[in-house]
Image 1 (tube, helix red, strand yellow):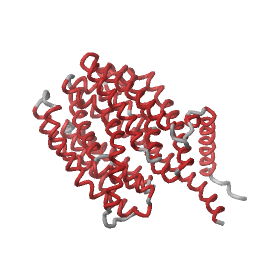
Image 2 (cartoon, rainbow, N blue to C red):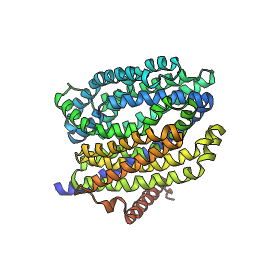
Image 3 (cartoon, rainbow, N blue to C red):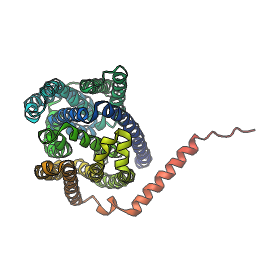
Image 4 (tube, rainbow, N blue to C red):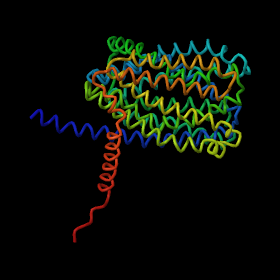
Amino acid sequence: MGHRGAHRAEPRARHSLVRHLVATGVLSVGIVVLNFVTGVLVTRTLGADGRGETSFLLSFVQTVGWLGALGINEGITYVAARDAHLARRIATTGSLLTLVLGTLGVVVAQLLLPVLASSQPGDTIEVGRVFAFTIYLNVASSLLLAVLSGCQDFGGRNVVQFLQPAVYMVIVVVLALVGSLDVDGVLIATAASTAVATVWAAGRIHRRIGFSRPSLRVTRESALYGLKVQGSLIGALVSTRLATVIMPTVLTYSAIGLYSVATNVSTILISVVGVLGNVVLPSAVRRGGREGALFVARMTRVVTFLSICVAVPMFVLAPWMLGVVYGQEFSAAGNTLRILLVSVVLGIASGILETGLQAVNRPLAASVSQLIGLVVTALGLLFTLERFGLTGAAGTALAAAAATFVTALLMMRAEPTFRLGEAFSPRGLAADVREGVHRFKGAVRRRRPVPSAR
């Protein structure tokens, strides 16, 4: 009886996961639309200089906030997925860690900001010092999302991720209508929207999971796992944001604005496709062993294929698209966008592979691949940024993404339960497409009205 029940439960679990993946993908398209609308509005209103200043401040504060979390959010996702019975204690522990990790991030930001923005106008530093306190919100949001992911509440996580850009768009549109959309307004909109999403996430956890006393064991295990994976987070964040953060020391805000627009457009791939990777870690951990490794291989195949499908038309239309949408001055970033699109495709694939390494409790291996990318990024920017400008920054991003992908692939290949051929199997991809078409047709048939009997 037990075996029959397990066999019945497996298709249900598979169907539930597919439903979550589809919902995540659809919601991601909505997020892209929201970000696109606000991005165009902000860029056209502020121009290249204003866009460059806001991009620097946003990238700086978000990067410090994510690094300040010390990878504990990944640790919380892993522990919650592994030990579901500790969900309430994990929720409380994650919430309390916000105060400690947020304070650490704010202190680091206050020390670094004058150094990185020393050649820029003084008001940039003052505004940045105030905005740095939103690191508390960034840390809280990431930890609460980690709890939702680890507890398999993908629906709640999707709502949180949609709520922030939706609220941001409303505030930005209102500011534009009253004529108050400037650099300060964009920062206020960012802080307010993050606060709304964070409060909603806390309420969701309270209703669905609940809170209990904090746990030293959860803190210790999450911290140890987080420190091991911290190299991966540092490498990923710094590799993608280092150029924007250090550009003020070499380039003008106008050039930073061009690069920021190209970067934001290229990350549409991450918003539409890469976000599917959010379900890989908790789902692979729950499956475990060979089933977990097969799931990682299949997700690598599907996500890479989808990202290429989205990237190709963007690559072809890059200069024209930037000029039409953002204004002719931004069409100069067309080649930069093309280079960044290739790097993002590689980055999405390596991200799935690194998540697979984390799922089999090899976070150090995931860190190694990203740290190699970080070394390539640092050296590349050192030798190319001042000499080649935006092209040098984009070329460095591509080289770092390629190095990270190859390293992650070799690391995952060493895992006995992982099959490299399965991850890039044309036959498997064809089967995925057939299954997708079959599920789509089934959903359409279920929605058709049934003819009434005469």
